[in-house]
Image (cartoon, rainbow, N blue to C red):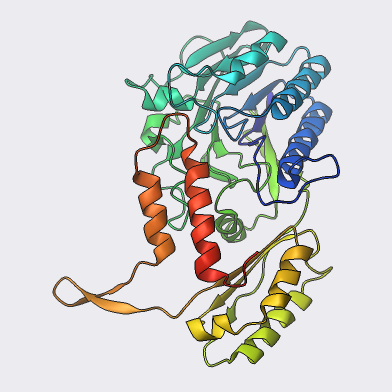
Length: 392
């Protein structure tokens, strides 16, 4: 019994401002290409069942183009693997915040996809001796939680769930991106499950034996730089889906080619440098990147930059870097300032972006607004002012 475990495609996401020749946001096209590539590979591997662990779409109301694209990919799966059940659950991104808003995922039931959008559902496949407990985001936040335990006589007991395992995600993650339903390892009840397929955490990770996050198929979070750091810690290169063999417990990482490199250049420490010297260091870091920065997503962090030096940088050159890359983020960080707090304890002063991020993440919003997009827009704007005085 082999299962394909895919998570967090985030179809329909729009980032940056570049478009393809067809007028599609370039990152939306990249994310779609990654999903198509994963579907191609799943068809080639011919697993016994396919699990998609949430956040198929980046928003509750995806565009018509994203819906049609997803429909065609599921249609391909059903036609190529007619005997393999396909189970899809809703994640926090594609779960409506209002009960009046319908869930688009139910559309795929027309293709024979088994969908759990609100309540947990148990799907049984007698021909495979397989039981799948499908637990969407809403089932974990909308009242009494379902019992996350195997049931029935089926030999293969599998659970697919979208949530955040308590204490697992890195401390430097983006809080607004990973604000999902929290579950504990005890909640998951590892004993008795043949496999637990998790979604929500964008970096592939083994939580416990036979309990895995597959990770996202592309860099589609608001904290992709944190994803890169986390992947380096785990010795991973790029994104993938998982092929799980229930008989042996073996997990095979199936890499997915990314649309373009995402590069975090070696940071520059600007302490003691004037603007001319710092311009040279920035140019040197960029020039060292094999193949240059054209059409790539690039960040260069420059630490200990006094305000007057940042104002005197070669902003014309910075604008050229921005025009050449798909996205170039010059992350200028001023020297740390400490102040006395309370009864004299030194503490780090919160930056303006920190304050804005916290305020936007917690203020009440209309149900129809996407909080992640709202927070990201606000923090991107303030970052542009605070850290990138060159503009545009």
